[in-house]
Structures are given as C-alpha cells and as structure tokens.
Amino acid sequence: MNEPRKLFVKSFGCQMNVYDSRRMADTLAPQGYVETSAADDADLVILNTCDIREKAAEKVYSELGRVRRLKETAAAEGRRVVIAVAGCVAQAEGAEIIRRAPAVDLVFGPQSYHRLPQLLARAEREGKAVDTEFPLDDKFDHLAAPSSATIRARGVSAFVTVQEGCDKFCTFCVVPYTRGSEVSRPVRKILAEIERLAQAGVREVTLIGQNVNAYHGEGSNGRPRSLAQLLEEVSTIDDIDRLRYTTSHPRDMDDDLIAAHRDLPKLMPQLHLPVQSGSDRILAAMNRGHTREDYIDICARLRGARPDLALTSDFIVGFPGESEEDFAATLELVRKIGFSGAFSFKYSARPGTPGAEMSDQIDEDIKSERLQRLQAEIDRQREAFNHRCLSRTFDVLFEKPGRHGGQLVGRSPYLQPVQVSAPASLLGAVAAVTITEVASNSLFGALAQAPAREPDLLGAGA
Ligand code: SAM
Ligand code: SF4
Image 1 (cartoon, rainbow, N blue to C red):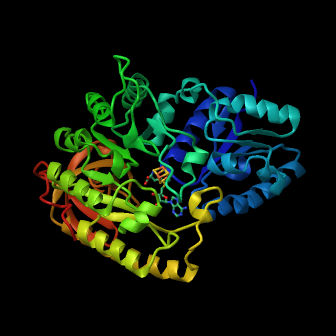
Image 2 (cartoon, rainbow, N blue to C red; image 1 turned 60 degrees about the horizontal axis):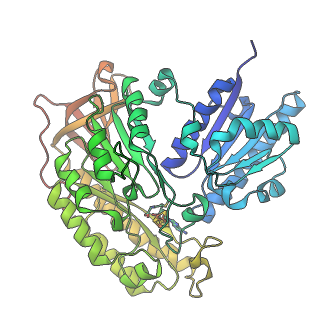
C-alpha cells in the first residue's frame, strides 16, 4: 500500500473558511491524504485565504514566503511539496498569485474545492493550475462526507454551511465578487448532514452562510423554506441540543425568525447581527438597505421574543465620508443597544468595490483613533455583560479538557467560554453550572445542584 500523503490546511478569516477547509480535507481523505498539524511535514499545503480586508489578503503573501522555504527544504531532501492557494484571495487574484509567488502550484476559488483531486492531477501534469470559475454544478453534491472518527475528533460543536454568497452588494465588501451570488442548499441535504454529525456525537450545530438569514433552500414539497422553517426542522433532531446561526443581515430578520427565538428552546439566546454604522448617512452610502431606527426596532423585537438574548455585532469605522458626527452616532447606537461583544474594523478599501472609488477616504490616523474609542466602549460592555453572569446558573456544553487537570471548558448559552471543575465523563454533555468568578473575558463556574433557570434580562442594555 502507498504511504499516506500528509495534508496541512491553514484557514484564514471566517467560519465559512473553517468549514470549507474541513470539507477539502474530507474530499482528499479517499485519495490517501491524512491531515497533519505540522506544515513542515506536509506533502500538500493549502492556504484557505480571506480577502475581506487588505491586511487579511497581505497575510497570505507573508505566509507564502514561509511555505516557499518549506518547499525548498523538502526539495533539498528529495521530497515534493505542492502548494495550493484557495478561498477568496485566490478567487480575486487568480493567476496573479503565481506571478507574485512562483512556488505556488495551484490556485482555486471557493466554488471549486470539490474538484480538488482533479485540480491536483492537473497541476501535477501541467506544472501549474488555476481554477476560479463559478461552475453550474453544486459543489456540495460532490463532497465526500467525513468519517465518524473525523467528526468526533473535530468536537461536539459543528458548523454546517446552509447558504453561500451574497446579492446585497454593500459598497465596502468583496464577498459578492469572491463568493458569487446567493445560493441555498436544499433542506433534505442539510438535515442528512446534521443527522450524520449527531450520530457521531455532535451536540451543537451552527448553521452558517455569508447571509444566512436570506436562506431560501428547497423544502420537501419542492417549495423554498425560510431559515426559521429550517431551524424548526433541525430542532426535531433528537441528539442536537443546541442551535445557532450566523451571519445575519438586519434586512432579512423577518417576523418568523424573530418568533423562532421565542418558540425554539434549542435555539441559543445569542445572535450576531452586524450593523456596521449608527449613522443613517453612512448606512445609505454603504448600501446597507436599513436605517439606524430599523436596527433598533429589530433588536427590541428580538428581545421582546427572547428577553435574555445576547447581541453581538460588526462595525466599520472610517468608511469614506464618515464625519465625527457620524461616528458619534455609532457610539451612541452601541450605548443604546448594549452588546455582549462586537468586532470592529477600520475601513479597508477593496479593489473593485464602489467604496474604493469614493473620493472622501478617511485618514488612517483618524480611523485608528475612532477604532480605539469604539473598542473601549465595546470592551466595557463585554465586561459588564460578563459580570452580570456572576452567581447565575445556566447550561454549559462541555467541549474540551481545560488547561488544568480535572477541569473542562464549555460554552454558555451566550457563547462565552466557561471553565469548570468537572469529570471528563461530562465531555460532550450539557450540565447546569453556577458562575463563581468573572475575570475579564473568562468565566469560571461550579457544577450546580439545581437545574439551570433562564437568567433574567441578561441581554438588556449596558
Ligand atoms: N454578511 C455579513 C454582514 O452583512 O454583516 C458579514 C460579512 S463580512 C465577512 C464580516 C465583516 O467584515 C463585516 O460585517 C464587516 O464589518 C467587515 N468588513 C467587510 N468588508 C470590510 C472592509 N472593506 N473593511 C473593513 N471591514 C470590512
Ligand atoms: Fe458583504 Fe454586505 Fe453581503 Fe454582508 S451583506 S457579505 S457585508 S455585501
């Protein structure tokens, strides 16, 4: 038998890339590839890239410098290492990557990863291969399923892509160009994938998509089903205890989805709902299709449906034309809503997007200063939220052993990591925990005597 070949995949960026990387590894497993966590041991290195901000894209080139040296060392030992660049930078830059980094053998976009075995064969035959097409066939139909052992090794919480791409064209964003237009997977295929995960021990599933709440996949009656309907169907799978979904757009937060937060006990009380800015003028320039008031109204209705809902968001500071007054409106919105956390970024002009062509670009120094002020407010809210959890009892899903013996780390319903002294037999199980200590971003707890009770108004404004 041939020696197994070793595969090293490095994911940059979002959860969709983490999911894609796993599916690439699954697709290569029948070809004899075994994953390794050591790049210098690998026969095939795949960098699964992110193009969302300039910094993310540039990281790929510095990583390619390191990988090139690995390839040279291996070649000196008589061993061939194949270097592949996948994901959104591959889609955006195509053959340019090989021009800038000639050590790269293969470049392929997010819609081609099911063709990986053929592409590798082509790179072997022709020296180099580039594939950035948007094929008509459904890549999910051609992907190999992971084995039960692989699923177990990946843990009790899993991502499942249900929707891909985006038709919204926010003026700052490359996603519609790199991931293509919105496509939803049929309900039947998603349920089959989740059932397989559940049989192998997965207890929590996060449905993911660039625009997950725009989901409109085909249902069993041949008609489109909404994300609320999909969540309802997934929640009937017995062994799945917890459900989440990300990332949502405020425009697609419909009444049914809001009601799902009230009606589906398995749906966790945490929602990532990016708003980007608190200024109507900037929201319009970003082509977000919602106002500040719309966002406030949606959050109020969500909290009406699920009073302990913890909200997180994304913000961009220094979008072209953002005045101090616009930025103040963002800070004011943050104070009004009260988040349990948020990601915030300096605007990064992406080639090919309308934002990059706008004339009133903001100075880097101003962006940095605004980012600092926004992050200080968000940090304050995160800590306040964490402190409100002190002495509360809620369910924790134990995911892995802790740093110290006799300790496990799990996740609260609000997605915070919680460290608990607990027996290893609880790994993969949900148990009630009382929070005994809060240290900045970490919660510590003890197994509770009484079952968990829904905490009151954890999600209320800071
Ligand atoms: N689809 C989601 C939405 O509509 O909010 C998010 C997609 S994007 C992968 C994740 C985040 O990256 C965005 O919410 C935004 O805050 C940030 N982002 C996207 N383009 C950016 C840019 N050009 N500069 C800075 N941040 C950006
Ligand atoms: Fe990008 Fe906007 Fe689409 Fe989100 S909704 S992926 S930010 S274009």
